[in-house]
Length: 295
Ligand code: NAD
Image 1 (tube, protein in one colour):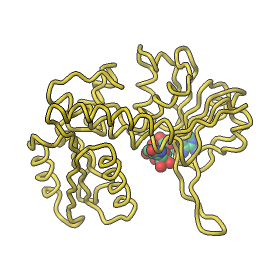
Image 2 (cartoon, protein in one colour; image 1 turned 90 degrees about the vertical axis):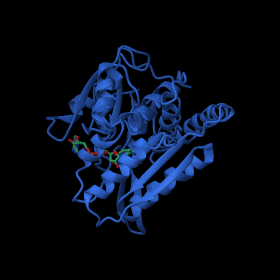
Image 3 (cartoon, helix red, strand yellow; image 1 turned 60 degrees about the vertical axis):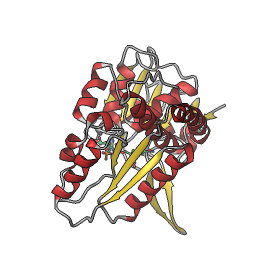
Image 4 (spheres, helix red, strand yellow; image 1 turned 135 degrees about the horizontal axis):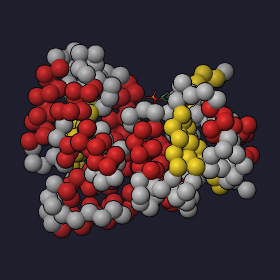
C-alpha cells in the first residue's frame, strides 16, 4: 500500500505552529516583516510574489511590497537592497528571481545582508549550511527534509539519490542529508544531466528525490520496490484541453513500486511556501537575539 504524502496538510500544520510563535513575538512588540522585491513584469513572477505576500498575511507576518521597473539600471535594485538591509523593521528580504539581464543574480545574492537572506542563498549562509551549522536552510530542500521527517522516513544510513544539482535544490539538499544530525546521516548520491545510467542509481535507492525539471523523468521501472519518492519538479505541459502541471516523476507507475510518494501539485510546493514563513520568523528572532529552537 503506497502512502501519498500530503504536503498541504504538513504545510498547514507548520503554518499553525508558526502562527503561535508570531503571537508570542507580538507580546514582545515584534511583528516579523518580509520585504519582497520584484524587478520583472513576467506574470508568473508577479503571481509568485503575490502568493508569498498572502501567505505572510495569513500567519501575521507583515510585508513590504517593492516593485522596480524591469528596465531600470542594476544600481536601482542595489540601492533598494541597501535601504532594506539598513531598515531595522525589515527581518527578511526576498528578491524574486530571475532578475533582468542587466542584473546578475549572483551580485544580488551577495548584496543582501546575510541575516535577512531568508532564501538562504548568500555565500555566508551556504557556507554555514555546508559546515553543518545552518542559519537559514533554503526553502525547497528544507521542505523536503521536513516532509521526510513528518512521514516517518528514516534518513540515517539510507541510500538517497537526488536527481538534479542546482544551487537552490539538489546541492543544498545533498548537504543537509549528509549532516551528522537528525534528518541527516544519509549516504547521498547526486545525479545530473551528465550522469551515465540514471536508472542504475535510482534503482538501488531507498529514497529518490527528483529535481531535474524534466516531466516524468523518473518512472516505476527506475525504482526499487518500497522506495520513498519525493517529486520536486513542477513542469507545465501541453494537453489536448490546454495545459497541466506534472512533476519529474511518472506518478502512476512510480506509485506501484513506492512505499510513499509526493504528488504534484500538493507535495513539495506547499512546503517551500511554508518554509519561507519559517525562515522569516527565524530571522525575526535571530536579529533580536531571541532564542529560536525550531518548531
Ligand atoms: P535547474 O534547471 O536549475 O536544475 C535542474 C538540474 O537537473 C540540473 O542540475 C541538471 O543537471 C539536472 N537534469 C536535467 N536533466 C536531467 C536528466 N535528464 N537527468 C538527470 N539530471 C538532469 O532546476 P531547479 O531550479 O533545481 O528546479 C528543478 C525542478 O524543480 C523544476 O521543475 C522546478 O520548477 C522545480 N522546483 C520546484 C519547487 C517547489 O517548490 N516545488 C522549487 C524549486 C524548483
